[in-house]
Image (cartoon, rainbow, N blue to C red; front, side):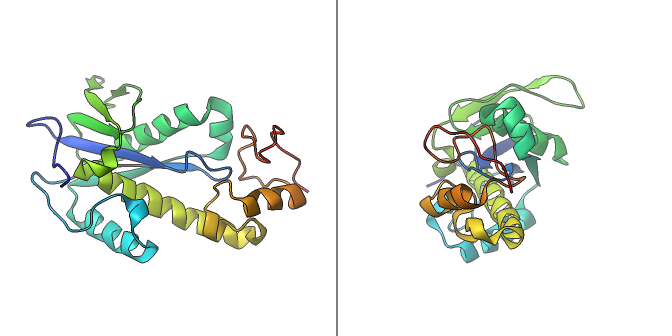
Amino acid sequence: MLQSHYFEGKIEAGCDEAGRGCLAGSVYAAAVILPPDYETADLNDSKQLTDRRRHELRSVIERDALAWAVGIVTPEEIDRINILRASFLAMHRALDQLKLRPEAIIVDGNRFTRYVDPTTKTPVPHACIIKGDAKYLSIAAASFLAKTYRDDYMDQLAEEYPQYDWKKNKGYPTRRHREAIRLHGTTPYHRLSYNLLGDGQLSIPFE
């Protein structure tokens, strides 16, 4: 059973990201503050559910959350600062947008950069939790939002570049995705700092 909080007696935001391992597209992150002792069915790892159910639960989360927001970092920014820093930046951008200011932050994973509240200019306490989306409700909720909003974004890009199969792979390094890069070149949405072909060659020009 997922736990409602990590920090006792604090307004706590859960954070998670989506798209870190992708070859193309922005990285998305979400921050969610849920009511105390919040409960809802099926709020487990978003990867275990169907796309339709994830979107249904996204609507429930957005309705019930005390505050929620999504942060985005572009492929150009990822190439410039690296994906780890970009993931943290996306979380910070989500946190910046919260209408309710968090007094503590819990993050899925084992690393995070200190977040400074833009209004008080003071650092906000945080905890990194490995597999946190399977342990804490607010991180699980953030996982749903980050994944579904990023999936919607990749579906839109797929309309522009259907040959890369982004409707199915969402930008991840599948065989079909890499073969399309080999045949058609890169797009403005590919992360040129990545090993796009899986053979040590970083990128090939877009034609």
